Image (cartoon, rainbow over all chains, first blue to last red; front, side, top):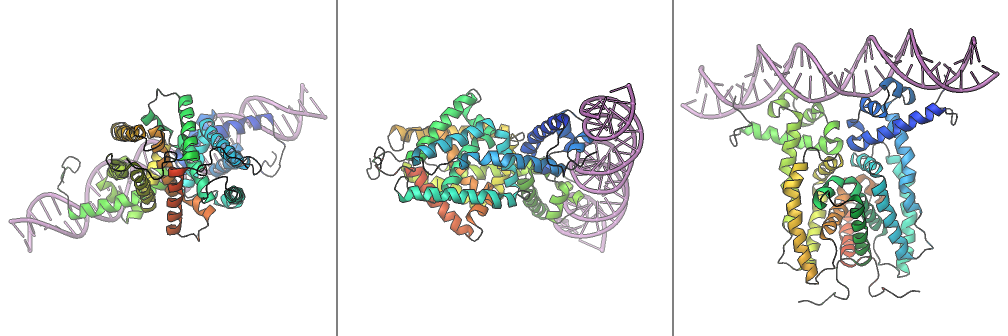
Length: 218
Length: 218
DNA sequence: CGAAATATTGACTGTTTGATAAAACTCTAT
DNA sequence: ATAGAGTTTTATCAAACAGTCAATATTTCG
């Protein structure tokens, strides 16, 4: 038996396959029930293997969870990484919003996993947020401030701007059930996505006040 | 022993006190760990009583949860209820946003409880959403459509507009840890609230595109 | 092939969890 | 003060839970 934890690369075909299946099953469970609410038994069942066999690959429940988080954080921050200082401000923001919305559509389980973790006070990833998320946000906030100084976008607190993009887009993944109750299940997922994209574009670009209507009254 | 479940009113002083303490402790636990992740032991400990004693007031875990939800849903929807068709559209929307933000500030546990439940697919309150939330949203969406037809606010899908108000405001309760990591804990809760209110006002009224700058380029 | 490395299983352990029963206690109204 | 309703505790249970271990089966590769 080799020490799996220390050795960095050498992985069997079976190892890779099974770890993949386990992490996928774990995502399913953790994203819905949170860390404490999820059980190894259910993850193992979902992954189609016995519990001791699963524990052969990940010795403790927490190891599965941490492996999941580590694997997903970079992917999750990718859209913000891509926000480009040299691009045109408004189109750049628009495409960031659209990319985040696509993430919510294509990776709802990942969105819910992070939501669950943050909701619980982020006990297991607070350090990661400090070391990875915060510097990235500060870097991009500086980009946004530059655009504001150039008069390219309205002057607002760039960090709150980022919060509002996160919250509005991730809402469609995290609160999907509620969205479906209100929009009706007949509104296909694709239609909902397009409607949301159109609405958010209007909101973030122009807001709700009708153009050139700041003062007039009926 | 009287049948507590059936009898509608008659409650002892002790009964009222203890149910209050239990529900408060339950809110603390359920809002963080979700239904499955929370345990009766911890709720009882938090409420300062023994587990069997707690179960004397609520026979099953689920009964506590349902009592909590039932008690909180109305309060949670109150700000939307108050959205008034006869008021001025823009100030009316502004004050709805502010009220929702105040709720997020003053009742973060309630916000997280609902978030947790929806995140899990709302298995226990889906019916309530159908019977209470949906009609209310449809009623208010009609109000918003009226304002749009009068040209008082920009024409958008009113339901997505409501989603964006929910998500941006509740974000400050549900994702509080993340917000604090990014803004720094030194930014007091009061300061964060005012900054958020100011930002959201700009976003929802005017968006990010600088006024009268729809076409011009540097 | 055949031996070493890897993978899987069944049986098991100690603990936590949701829930119950009955006995003991306390409060309240007469 | 005291009977009876209402409250609390002690003891207990079965199921679910995270995790271990030794034995068995399978794969890998010289």
